[in-house]
Length: 296
Image 1 (tube, one colour):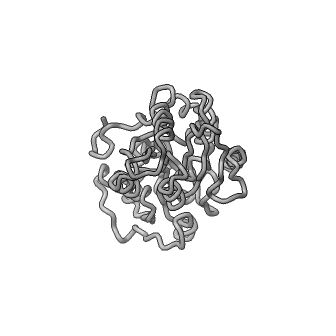
Image 2 (cartoon, rainbow, N blue to C red):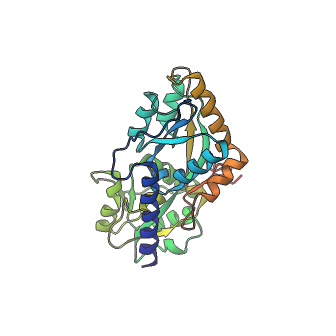
Image 3 (cartoon, helix red, strand yellow):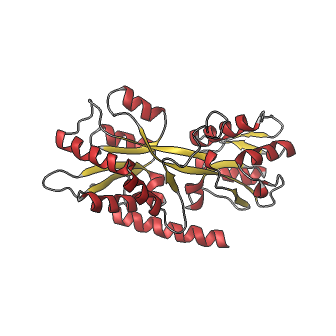
């Protein structure tokens, strides 16, 4: 009941954030107000950042700090926000680190990607929790318990979850076994917990979509969260030489990017998470050796 209440309150804050952006009940792209001087920045942000309410709060406070309009013109999965950036409708793109981000840089459409923050992945599974994930000290120990007990585990095809699982398996010396590993055969990634309910299986999923009602199933609960090694980076991209941004827009977006990555900007991010968070973590919040098996 407590988790349901938190989810309801979180969804209320999300809807308020959408309303503030002019996106509630509308399409992924929404034309925001522009100043006559054209010195504002238009931003395309992956949907989870708006879903949790963090980016709307960051954009508002940053706009006030810089005395410069910061308008969110797209909030959608990467398939929706990347085109908005390449068409020139946005001068800043906030997405997960990915092949798409690297391709934008390699093609000259974007500058080098810079880490702005991190989101968290969690372990969800049967409320009975036969593997004892609830009492595990971290994600690596939890996946060891799942493997040792032979409990069903779904290898979700979502790239973020896949990366986190591979990292934890590698750190824990875990070899996936066909006797307990299950393929993600759902019609869409968000349906993975429906499959988990049928199979009484565990899965690593994004905390934001789970907490804000984008995925879920009866009998499946959040069992473990808070492991820094289960985080994935959000990067910000600004125009490269092939992007159609004007010289004035480039100056404005570079000012915004530098501020978001500064100590002051990171403090805004920290406080934008709200009392039900955190949902997006600071850029320096993970161990330096997270991908090498060594805690930095």
